Amino acid sequence: MSGASEEPAIETRGLTKRFGRQAAVDNIDLAVPRGAVFGFLGPNGSGKTTTIRVMLGLAGATAGSVRVLGEEMPARLREVLPRVGALVEGPAFYPFLSGADNLRRFDTADRHAPTRTRRARVADALERVGLSHAAGKKVRAYSLGMKQRLGIANALLMPRDLLVLDEPTNGLDPQGTREVRHLVRSLAAEGTTVFVSSHLLAEVEQICTHAAIMSAGRLVAQGTLESMRRSGRARMKLTTPDPADAGRVLRGLGLGLEGDGEQLTAPLVDGLLPEQIVAALVAEGVRVRGFAVENSTLEERFVALTGEGFDVVQ
Amino acid sequence: MSSKQADSAPAVRRRSAAGWALLGSELGVLFRRWRTWAMLAALAAVPVLIGLAVRLTSEDIEPGDGPPFLDRVTQNGLFIALTGTVVSIPLFLPLTVSVAAGDTIAGEANLGTLRYLLAAPAGRIRLLAVKYAAAVAFCIAAALTLVAAGMLVGVVLFPVGPVTLLSGDTIGVGESVLRLLLVAAYVSLSLAGLAAIGLFISTLTEVPVGAMAATAVLAVVAQILGALPQLDWLHPWLFTEHWVGFADLIRQPISWDSFGANALLQGGYIAVFCALAGSRFATKDVLA
Image 1 (tube, rainbow over the protein chains, first blue to last red):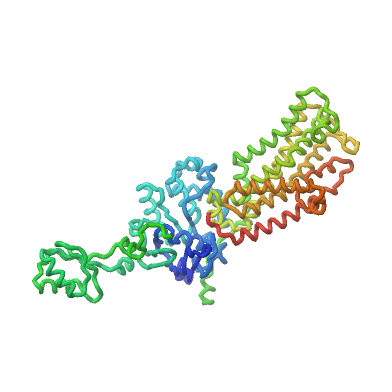
Image 2: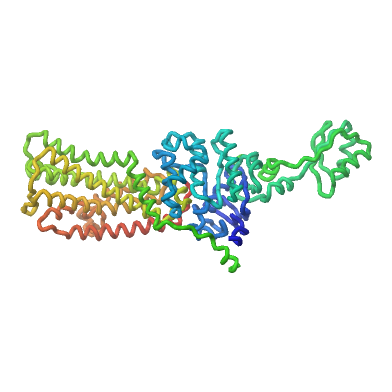
């Protein structure tokens, strides 16, 4: 057990998935540490869901390898997947069955799930996502948010070592979104690794310890949230009544200026400390009214890396 | 690396026998659908209509008029079960079986539930086996519904007594019922081959209606080919070849020849198309 916990929860090597000529996933090396809450970011069409499908053995890789919980996939699928709860590309249910019956149905598919405790586990999972009151209602009559909750409940039917949640807050109201955040935190506190794909950056920033960014099928960044923020250039922000002099000084220090008027901003460069900048400005007689260093947000980093924002990549 | 893998063996989970719960769940889903009951009700309506039509007209039916066994219905109501089965075999029965079999995998893909079954994990071959078992259960339910409804209508509307067989012998009511159940078994077997074809087609698409239609069309085409004398050489290979061969079961003594030939033929179709479905589904990318 101790050896296993040191291996990443998910590890891909050179993972590639082509549909015809187009590579939906192009040579990605993903490493999700055990116990992490891992945000998987990317614009629509960047290959997130395809990666998840290959991870879960729903689709085969064109090239490369996937290890989940230390086991080769899809060769060890039957041993691995019972330990993985998944919500993939939105919830899907039998509309003519009730919420509880749908969960029971999926639970019977897992032959490791004991029949004896099925009712109790289904009731617990429904309770956990706040759907107990609608357990007997046909899914046909569920709202999108209720289906989403039921999908999360399905992932929680058994104790899991890894949860893969694809856009878990899709269709949820702010209240539901908060509940999901709370749920993810409490699961992580119990030691479950949570892999969340999302395009909601603020959300990922709030709950994740690690993140990776996909763009056009490629993995363009990954690491702890801290390192992702840091590797985005920090910026200095200067307020001064002498913008012309200040601009001359800053350019002399090798900084690329942005902004005009009394507010000047510039990305910081390596080897130049903020206090040195202020000292240089003051030495040249520039009046400094305000000086601040701002770390880049995940959103800035995201836009910098994916460029096209949330547009669908062709 | 190898030593590391040795002590990183995953915690072995207790495994519940063979996972029969999935089959129970599959049958539960099949027989809780409104559609399944509508199809069975439509099948049951066939002998009811025949019974009412014969009862409400006073004209005598000349032997040879109308579908087989119709002329005997007024003398013995049990024959309605046979007449109902004979008229339903060319289209009605295969149509309902095509719906059930064509829906197996394509229906789950269409709902999106296929990915959750596989992620559970159901196991692809296990899921396919369960799906086929449920489709066969539907074949049996369909054949039994026809025969049972026919017997019931016969008892209600007509005199029922010892049955005179095609061979001229007479058997009691009890044995007649047994013979009719044998007919139901024969028809179920005939449909099991079609269900295997439907299962395979269902793995090819995510559009259940397409799989259903393709399966039904194949059943009709096979019967048309079977009706062309120019294609004599092909006839023994058509899965529809023995579909109406159950008359042998109402002779005295019973002739098992066509039952045996049908079993062999359907067994071949089941083996081939289940294998095709398995090889297709085992490696298919599930993207729906």
